[in-house]
Image: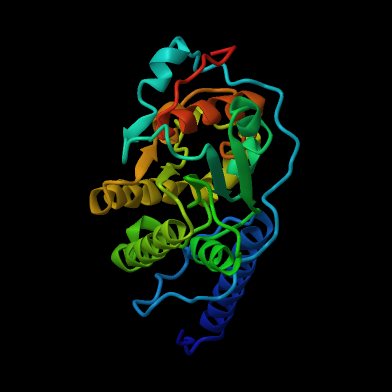
Length: 289
């Protein structure tokens, strides 16, 4: 920034510099407090390889869920019809001879089904591995360091904590990083015994379904969820054996989350049925839908 010659120009330039500095600090503080990761909107990401710094382990916001259900959208679709779109790609067929072992690899969103999923699969051994703010690269490293094998079926519910440039800035660079990390994770899962891998897409709800208290967070992060879903759809083209459970297609309903992302009880039940559909198991109607 070049200061003007007049004292008035100096004052204006200094004020603009101060405002810009405060804006960057505010943006950084909000990003750190939520656990979700997006490239700063104020500057386009570098074209060099993105940073491999360790992800934050801070949990996503635990604000109390809103009690008001949006009145602008009233679901009229029966559960059977909702789940008819739950599988975007079926992947390899589930083999009944495989051990009934399942590993869920997830960040804080999928952790919302850590109790609901085992209850829905009583004859399966369900192993939940994950933590809030888990990124793909860290998940792969932790998985590789763990001597325990994974289940014959692995459900991957990751992608909310990934890096992107707003308005598709340097999109190819960020997409290439996501794809490398996703492919590496899938390779590790197969090395550790996975026979069927099911990846869950990210929720991208209609704006009218977002509770007022969640609008700020949604505006901060939801813009890149479609970018992740684009790459997941490309992933199953590269690797047709991977299945895609389409939470994005199923979850455009009110009452599923408390902040447009994290699951309420109803959302957890519907996500479990979406996962079951992706695996190739029979689904069960969800009361209330």
